[in-house]
Length: 234
Image (cartoon, rainbow, N blue to C red; front, side, top):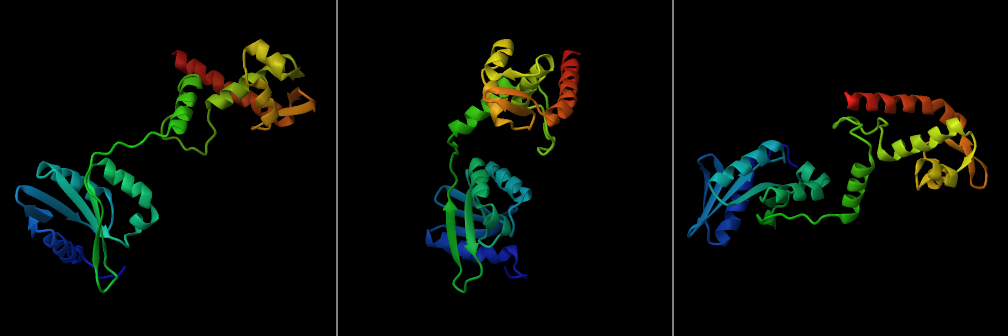
C-alpha cells in the first residue's frame, strides 16, 4: 500500500461508482464521509484506511441517519487481507455493507463485497453440541472467564479423569468395568486407554494402575477440586 495514501483518496472512486448508479453524491455532510441520494433512498459510506473499532462504531452511529450504511477500506488493508472471513462475519453481523477499493491499480476499481443485510449466522450444530456437553458435564464454575487457555483447568474431562484416578487410591489395580460400577463412570475404560494426562499405566489387557506421573500429579488436582468445592459452598 502506498505510504502517502489518504482516506480522501478513496472518495472519488466510490463517488464515480455511485454516480454510475444514478445517485447524487456529496462528501462530508454532517460528519459523514460520503452521502449518496437517489429519490428517497439515502446511502452513507464511511471511509478508513484500516479496519478498527472506531470505524465500526462510527458506521453503527450512522444508522440514526440512514438504514443503508457501508464502510469502505482499501483492498490492500492488512486486517482485511489477513482475517478476511472473520472481518466479513463481523461486519455482516452489524448489518453494515462493505466496499473495498483497489488503490494500487492505475485503473482503480470499486467492489461492493456485500450490501447491508440482516445477518442470521448458521449454527454449527457439532460445535454447539460440544459447547453444551462441556457446560452440562462440568461440575460447577471451575474457571474464571478470560483466564489463559494455556493454563490447565478443571474441565469436565479432567474432572472425570480425576474421579477415575482417585479410585486407584483405594484399589491400586482395577479394570475400567470395575471403576464404572463403583463410581458410575461409563467412559472409565476409555479414559484409561486414552491416558490423555499420562496418569494411568496398563498392567495387562483391560487392567490398569496409577502411573508415577499420576501418583505425582493427582494430589495437586484433588486439592484444587476440593478448594473449588469449598469455595462454591460458601
